[in-house]
Length: 86
Image (cartoon, rainbow, N blue to C red):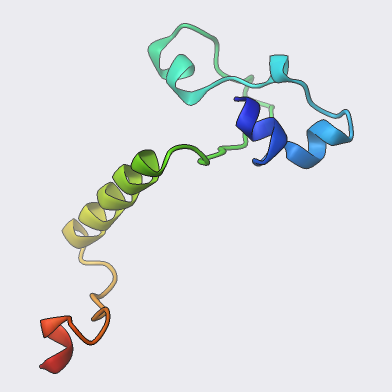
């Protein structure tokens, strides 16, 4: 959460004094029910900054879901990619 206030999505608002750490809830805590979610009229900001492994897991899930839905296309990556030759 501190990362969100210092280098993440909340940085500018925190520096301007518009938001404090007590205003922020983690997604995990809301999902687990250990904290209430935001009121229905609240603005919700999702800050996905975190560890690289979290980013990779979310990206892998998005790619898999896109494939299941027939979305996107595969693009060859670099000269060593065998798909680039064909």
